[in-house]
Amino acid sequence: MTAKKAKQTKAIAKKATTAVKVNVKVKKVAPKAAANKDKQTRIEILQTLAEQTNLTRVQVESVFDALNNVIESHMKKRGSGEVTIPKTGIKIRRVKKKASKARKMVSPLTGQEVTIAAKPARYAVKLSALKTLKEMIEQ
Image 1 (cartoon, rainbow, N blue to C red):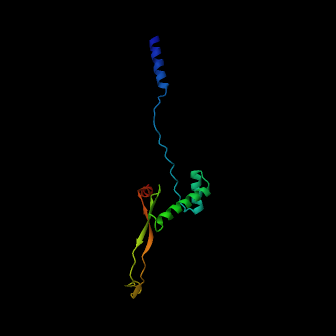
Image 2 (image 1 turned 135 degrees about the vertical axis):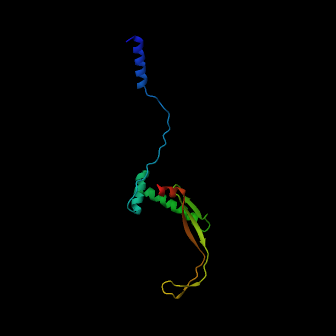
Image 3 (image 1 turned 180 degrees about the horizontal axis):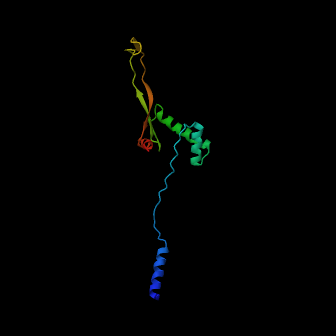
């Protein structure tokens, strides 16, 4: 083997072993929560959230208290009447129900005429599932 060929084979071997640097941005995705087969209690939910967020259970509970205060301020008489909970896909709205008159109807059980009492106008709460919550259910 000639000296020229030996140099060429060394150069090829050197190129094969050198690492090529590539700039790639890796997007960090939060780990998906495991499916819970059993219903969780309030304490279990708070404990799970505390473990996932590195907060104490008392701190997590105070976050829920603050969220409750925000929802209450929106639902009050002079509030906006609508609040969306971020990243959960839940919208809470205050809906006004009209007053209903007293009426008579035939009971399907007995066949006798029954009077249904009048109801005054009132407010009700309506929850709506937004796109993010619907996508969670499909997966």
